[in-house]
Image 1 (spheres, helix red, strand yellow):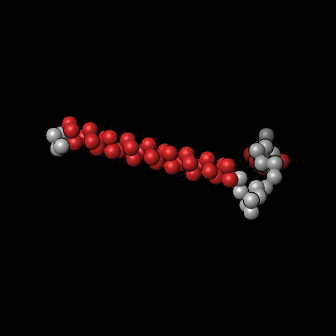
Image 2 (cartoon, helix red, strand yellow; image 1 turned 45 degrees about the vertical axis):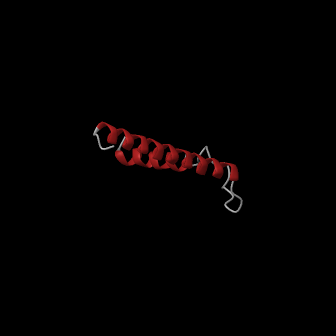
Image 3 (spheres, one colour; image 1 turned 135 degrees about the vertical axis):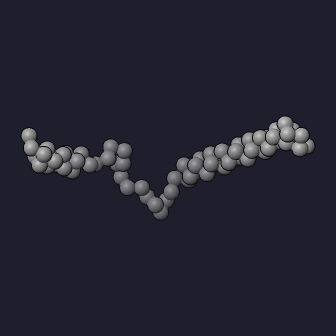
Length: 69
């Protein structure tokens, strides 16, 4: 099989199979899903809180180990 025929078949298959299996309809941007929005922001705030807590404990441990405090 020549490269042109192989390429044309690949283009045909990609056009036929280009519909995503995960989106059945377009999302309604005027009415967001507030539960998902809240979960996204809540989990982000939780992770940032853990990051700041871990950083402060790491800084405290560094000061104790090096005799700075």
